Length: 265
Image (cartoon, rainbow, N blue to C red):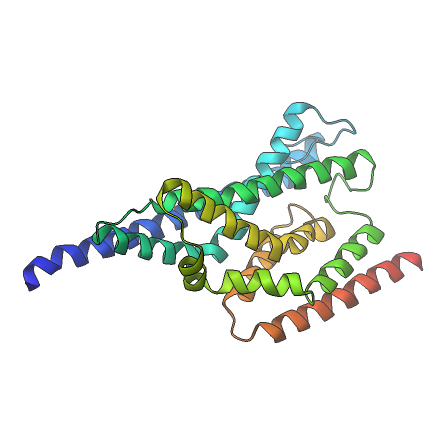
């Protein structure tokens, strides 16, 4: 009996390692490309007036917009995949147990695909917003930061959102993976894709205002990108959601008010 169980236990561990390796690989590649784009903008772009990461001309071409979308999509994958890791690993565990019981299951990659589809849609919105701000000369072509009034307004909006019921509802769904899987499980690959989309929507509802803050200190500011990614992860895993949201909300409000007042002086 013990000998018969050993291959099963080894297979379970192997599957878990495959999921973890996949998450690390996807996240690592996304971060590597994000770092490359930031380097490209900071070196070649500043020297030649054009880079892979930011068109410097007033009018964007279709190719420019495509590059912007890819930049946003890769950046969202790099920032959001780590915070979704607990949910993804839990889905993988449930799927393995269903497979062992000869019940319908779907590969974890299908669930991840649904999740990333939502953030790819957000990336499209981010690229469109950047295009609009750039065309209206409200975005610095060098630092990719919005004007102080717009930046301050985004900070105030993000601060207020930290106290909102919608934020609490979506964050709760992101923080309780087992509860989500038990209440919203759907069969088959189509069901797994829908679950990934649903979880992505909860995550988007929790973090979309925070992601807009990329326009405050620079869309390709690596320190700012890392700080936002770390804060999103902290929100989802830290015990005691209230103090994190209240403290961050108060700081964002104060920062936004100061930025607007400072620009008026």
